Length: 217
Image 1 (cartoon, rainbow, N blue to C red):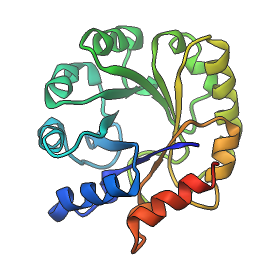
Image 2 (tube, rainbow, N blue to C red):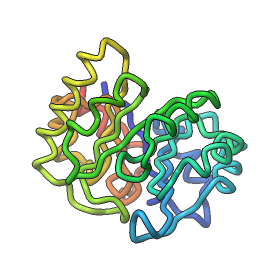
Image 3 (cartoon, rainbow, N blue to C red):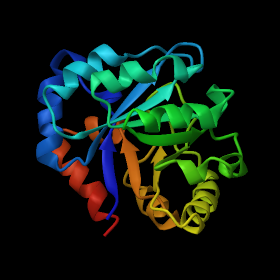
């Protein structure tokens, strides 16, 4: 069964603690935190201060996805805030291996992400050093976008790369995941899916989480 990491970008920030408790009751596995700087992507969200507050109210793994330029500048701040998994983009840092090494040295799980237009081969040299690969199935920057169907092939390619590495690497997929495509994503090799709008748009959030999980049994 696939792990579900709800994106709090779609939550009600006026009642964030309440929404997180509902996610916990619904069986969410991780909390996905979309960090955007207005430069790498055309939106601004939140940073380590919010994560520090979240750490105090939940024991779920905090899965931070940095959609920011030069993420190496802030790695220590995210560690201090209580981040468990820190993912950076291939496209956002010049010295990717050095950045991944920084994350690992601070004791966090390491993740690397690629945009839809970036070929899977861009991950080849870094996969031996990471714990998670995140394949974006929409262009990052906004929630509620439609899944790009051609990304299924990329998920399959990355799944093979992870398997042949000989290491246990999570393959996470983010962007437009809902009940119509989660099965295909899972069969392509994903082990974790991020879901935002498809969970928080439902009246019954716990049921929405469980429905997604049932489709991958």
